[in-house]
Image: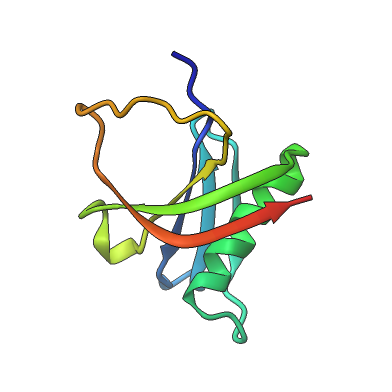
Length: 107
């Protein structure tokens, strides 16, 4: 079975040497890190990070947002998956996802 590549975004709190950031990574360890902008709310920060990674890698399409239940809850992790017209069978060995009604288009 073929799987689409997922993108994980997470909020990284400030340290003594760096400010707060939103980080987006994929399964091949491609990564972008964005400084938190004061006008962003939580969702906008995650969305900005996933858009930046897609721009860096020249990826386009529709992404759907979900969250992995109880996975790094202090980091506010989100999972973005590519929307497909085919629905893959659910693999019970994988972590359960809580989906949100959010979809973005990357162009």
